[in-house]
Amino acid sequence: MIDFQNGEIMKLRQADMQDVGSLVGKILLPGEQVVGVYKTVRDRVIFTDRRVMTLDIQGATGKKQEVTSLPYRKIVCFSVETSGILDVDSELELCFSGMGRVRFEFFGSSHIAEIAQVLGKYIL
Image (cartoon, rainbow, N blue to C red; front, side, top):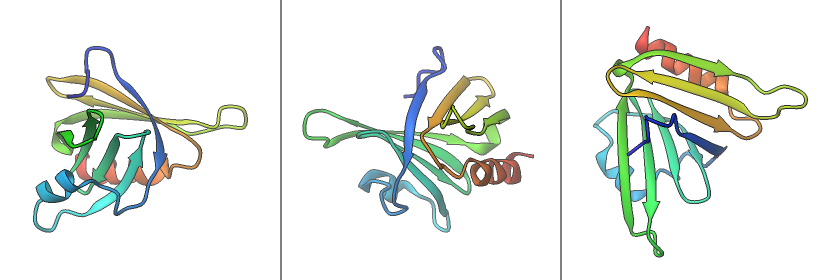
């Protein structure tokens, strides 16, 4: 589960759209579309047209997995920070009703504007 108490930061790189993981692929709803996939060394953050999911791959073999599903309808506000000349990372902070906030940090070109557009479309 995402650590909302500490405003968890995940440093992410863009991944292939097919790299959602077997567990996430099985729990997508009929008609739900993946719009972005980002990864750390092992873990994933998947943005769909309905929610953001985190995939925590655990253990030495990676067979143990935990998925956290955060529906866009629970987001009360979000903040986007784009990269600059010296600071090449962009950030996305999401505030969830009744849960807290989480912050994702993206390396390099991460299409942060497209993510913000998807979020705006589904929560505003």
